[in-house]
Image (cartoon, rainbow, N blue to C red; front, side, top):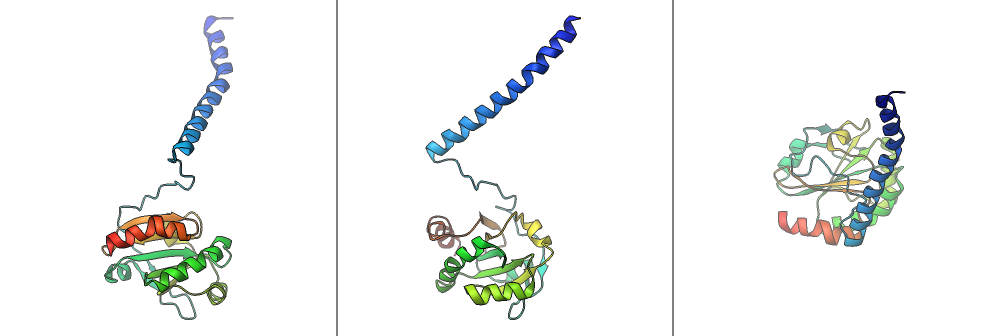
Length: 189
């Protein structure tokens, strides 16, 4: 057997060891990040943060919704929290009281019923409260794709000039609002 063939075999046998070593290094980096508080398991970056909202137009969510689009967000003249939700989403139910508190505090929230039947979304809002100043539906989910939504609930803070300043994947909690959203509301008010 030639030396070249033997070398290839050795490299082939060492490949799994190299993959395991790389995985171990990544795991250690994650553990160190957790110890120092720098690891964010929700840390899937959004390509929209720091950029203008995509161009879109969505129809109204029956029975009382008022559809909206990118032009409406720009014309609002103030920051808006855009919230994607669905009637079939359990975390959306848990998030509903927090959104109602934000509404009571005067935060404009515009909702998008994501991949949901109009009747089911309307029933969800009757059962859990309707915090939305404007309400649209994205039944096919195309606008959600443009926003980069990968699951509901998901919220985007859009400043008065149409720039996405913050994204939160998952349900909003009181802690998230006080630590993440309130500083943005003060900064961009």
